[in-house]
Amino acid sequence: MTAPATNIDSDSNKTLDRSIISSLAVLIVIVLIDTISDMAVAPSLIFYVNDLGGTKEQYGIIMSAFSFACCCFKPTYGRWVDVSGNKYHIPYAVSFTAAMVGNLIYFIAILMPRGIYGLMIGRFVAGMGAANNALAYSYIATVLPLDQQTSFNVLLSMARIVGMILGPFVNLFLGKIDASIGIGHSISLPMNPHNSVGLFVACVQLLVLIIVLLFFKEPPGKKEGKINSNSSNQDVRSGEHEFWGSMSSLEIVVPLFIIFVVNCNFLLIETVFPPACAHGLGWGPVQTSSVMGSNALIMFVLMMFVMFLSVKKVSDTLLVMFGNVFGIVGGLLVYYLWTYQAPVWHFVLPYILSITGFPFIVSSNRSNFTEAIKSKPELANVQSTMQAIMSMTASMGGFVAPSFVAMFVMRSPEDVETRSRNHRELSPAAWSIPLSSAACLFGLWFEYLVAKSREKDGQETVCARPSERTSLLTKRKTKVEESV
Image (cartoon, rainbow, N blue to C red):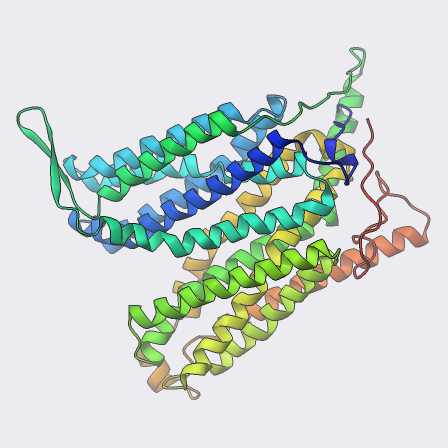
């Protein structure tokens, strides 16, 4: 294994270069535009599928195609950055090109003989492009000091929330489009509110690509250690053993488990809330959308609060613990209070509480993950790949949660009204929300015990880190020191 790179964040008080600041601003724009694009496509997709004569099953496959491609290609971009010496321009250019091609296929699928398959291909290719969102976190891990990363990760999350709020306005803007584009003498490409979203998103992606090429600056290159040409195969095997040993350490596994759980639970709640309210309260899309939109604003405010706490040096691990407590309380209330014909607050309050933990967990958990990577020399040169693995793990919730809800969590109206003594909208499988959140707390506690045991026995980790990872509730007073 090569020696780890020296990171520029060794001095946390160092003033950031203007080029770095402009690049961080570009990352915020990328996240904002990506989220707006996703939120613009989501509401119109089912109607586009119907226009093309598709079925509900095909609609589900098309939705999964985007998520599947996004999940699979995240490690590809991360590894690309690592092996190219920390260069981001080409991976970003390729990903945005893929996104543009995918959305253009989405736009012209209405002309294809089997347009539903063209739509599927378009969403898959667009998902290949959307996989670049993991690059933002690896860039942050490269150029920012550890004590500033949580705050900027929160800014990215806030940009995502703003995108979720602005996305539906794109559909309002495109809602009255009814035109056609002549292609040659005999072909006319219809433009309606459903397929025009693809053209709009492709144009926006082109604009973002231009912004990246003009204003996004590459970070300092990685300084690889010299490799002894006489190193034996035994040395290589030893290095690989150390690498996989670090990958399986609690400091790496626990944050990955937490991000998987929090995304699964978030999507589970978002999936079951509309149908549960439709049956339990008689609500339609307008009422549920208003609650979900209001909750997005609440999350935005909470993210600002989390950023304030991070600036005040509140432990990232403490924030993660606090968020999981919300998951436990909210999950229990969701199961017990979501009953047929219950008062409105029985549905709204548990929904808000169960989602409230999300802002406390996501950014802080990623900061803990980044700190763990930097404490392990054998992982120092695969920072982008590791960040992509975390993003991929989070994306896996997009596969697990909807299927789990459909198979085990949701009850049919007949079951709720006639076969359930308490008329609960959800089955006992909904206990997965509080139990999985409790498992996250247990993982943090167990990691703490193992770290304390190592200290007691006088055993040191590969890179000593007297930080919040060895004391759950204390503020970080020291910085990671990397070996060259």
